[in-house]
Image 1 (spheres, rainbow, N blue to C red):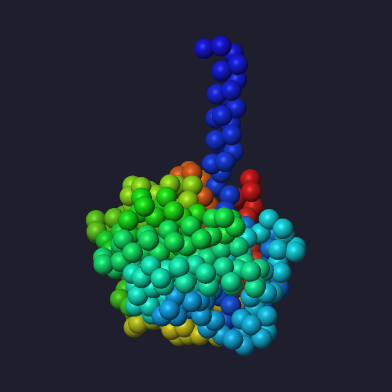
Image 2: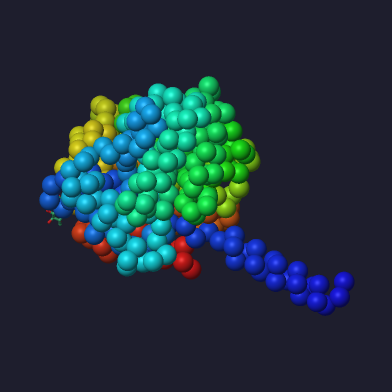
Length: 378
Ligand SMILES: *[C@@H]1O[C@H](CO)[C@@H](O)[C@H](O)[C@H]1NC(C)=O
Ligand SMILES: *[C@@H]1O[C@H](CO)[C@@H](O)[C@H](O)[C@H]1NC(C)=O
């Protein structure tokens, strides 16, 4: 081999490494946070556009005919929610903003109906492009929770129809997907990976609210867990499932939760993992959801709680009298970012940035997002 060839190969390897970076920080924004009281209120201008590479505006809905549906006319349109998020690109011109459609509360039947009709798939693509052009967005994030066994092929056809329509204009198609290997039904992973720009694997909600205390988003299985739990209910198992199934690592992101699941301890002095509970915790002052709290609420309302870090699962829990939460903090997030780098993933995504510690009760303002950004940019 002559030197020019060796030099060329050297450059090719360098280029490949440069393009195979773990550099995406995809920030979901729960747009309804504008109506939260007091310190819980979070408006589009509270997003720091220099700490995210993508902002996903949650959520829009889907109509039966395939057209996109505005779910909160007052907030999204009249108060300018959509336009104010896309205006963040004036601050950071490299930022991409996407419309996230669906979510856990959406009717999964509508997605099934639209995916199975060629006309409705095209109508969805057309409607999405109209939204991008009107509101200044760069792509669509499909959050269908979840396609079933009968949707496997039509889901890929839907994503392909979107990609084909978007590609000439450079618009992105991304998805958020189920993370529990044993419960995944409706995915042809290899085919999805060919079509998609990003696959956000929702590596959280592995345990929630009922039964004994347990972690929301363990990175690894626990030493005392059953083998089924070890293989199904942690972020590492989920990511390996998607990679082994044929997903391009450079399209996969690991999900980072800025919230945790809460429990009421039966006995405050029995406060470890797998402790008996009297059910899910009370709704938070801001997020108002039984059985979960935002990291912001943990910081503001449990400043004196005791934090215990689980070395096997690489996540903390906190207890405060009979209150218990399995959640994420800077330390556990550091492990998840490093994991994404070791697996050569596209990056991380966050559900969701408005429950970061924006007022700095735990330390630096927006400490979680800043720590992610600093580790990714290193
Ligand atoms: C595993 O279970 C044993 C026995 O109950 C306990 O002593 C130990 O602390 C547990 N380890 C972890 C990491 O939870
Ligand atoms: C936390 O501890 C500090 C110092 O002991 C105390 O002043 C404060 O009231 C405590 N906060 C709560 C919410 O219990």
